[in-house]
Image (tube, rainbow, N blue to C red; front, side, top):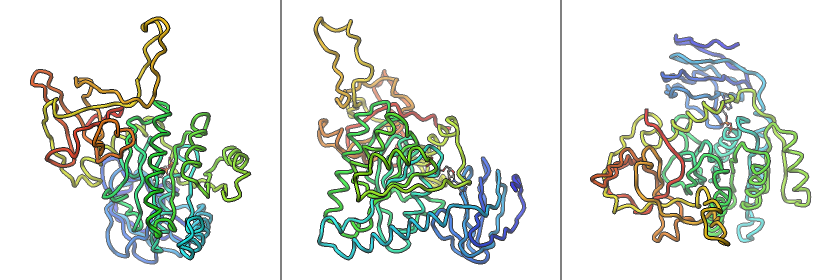
Amino acid sequence: AATGGSTTVRQVKLDKECELRIETSLDLPLRLRLLTGTAEIFGTEIPPEIWLTIPPRLKFAVFTWYGATIEMDGPTETDYTADETPMISYINVHAVLDGRRNRAKASPSDSDTSQGPRVVVVGPTDSGKSTLSRMLLSWAAKQGWKPTFVDLDIGQGSITIPGCVAATPIELPIDPVEGIPLEMPMVYFFGHVTPSANIDHYKVLVKELAQTLEKQFSGNAESRASGMVINTMGWIEGVGYELLLHAIDTFSATVILVLGQEKLCSMLKDVLKNRPNVDVVKLQKSGGVVSRNAKVRQKARGYRIREYFYGPSNDLSPHSNVVNFGDLFIYRIGGGPQAPRSALPIGAEPAADPTRLVSVSINRDLLHLVLAVSYANEPDQIISSNVAGFIYVTDVDMHRKKITYLAPCAGELPSKYLIVGTLTWIEN
Ligand code: ADP
């Protein structure tokens, strides 16, 4: 049963294949350690004896395969033990993937058979997609593979801030507190938190990301054999469904894991039935997955952006920088709202190219927006270029023609080309 609000040091004994589900408090961290046995947090083993400091607002589970005793120190929103989990079915999937990786590794010279599994995780929002992706990646990394994590979920963002599609190799089990190391992600900036803002642009970025990875894989047998785990958006109806099919095609997926959705599973099985090399597998959603309403998700986006600048444990100090308007070139992708026909010369069609590059003039509308710094050398490369990082506009001085922005570090930006969308953040 949920205990909630407890603050004393306490021990919890977990039987085999059980998990302790915890929501840390809204403002205080929780200290936790493994006293006996073995246990993992979302696929990553926790070390014995050592106190872990779990930040506020985190929802997670400590799972044990063989039994464990956990000690906690500090308040929680809730904590309870569950003996029914889908973990056995998840680890069975891992075992199948592992077999496929081994087979791929055994034939390194054949470009087809040397390709390890490309797994797409699909399901509605809050079905545990990101969590399952994470477990599959950590279990694979524990066995020495270097799977590539691809995150197409622009609404939340496991690899970087929301509004991006991104990929990164996972070389070690993912740290339960620090998350995914931000050293080498390949990030494309969409700039909106829902694809409906510009479907064509979203598809272009997914394609760019897939092509870049394909190129990297062709020169790297280890990555190729390890394969990919691709996390997707929770939007699974209508256009959302089409975008799922687009992702499955674009990444040449071989395994589709469907979390907790009969209908989606049978739809996918049906459209993919003529592809013998694609398996569609239905998996149970964990009872521990916490549902988040739109407001909570929006807040989570804000925390994620904050984390980019300040670090997961508030351990980074971003820099405030000032530059002249003339030193930056800001672009957005797509024409935004189209000009009404009545505003155009007779006979002219509204320019509707959704992937057109549009120069943005600097004014106070940029305040509180998060912009991406492109790696492009020329403006016409912007749409197909990945980004170096992000800045946050904190002031626009129209008189002195200067912009003040927050960046993870001091000094000049790696490029003068910036991309803007609708991604905002109010620092708190
Ligand atoms: P999705 O990616 O489908 O939106 P997530 O994997 O992000 O869903 O899960 C939603 C939330 O539930 C996350 O905060 C996650 O940490 C939490 N969660 C997932 N599985 C468990 C579990 N077994 N116990 C406790 N919390 C969990």
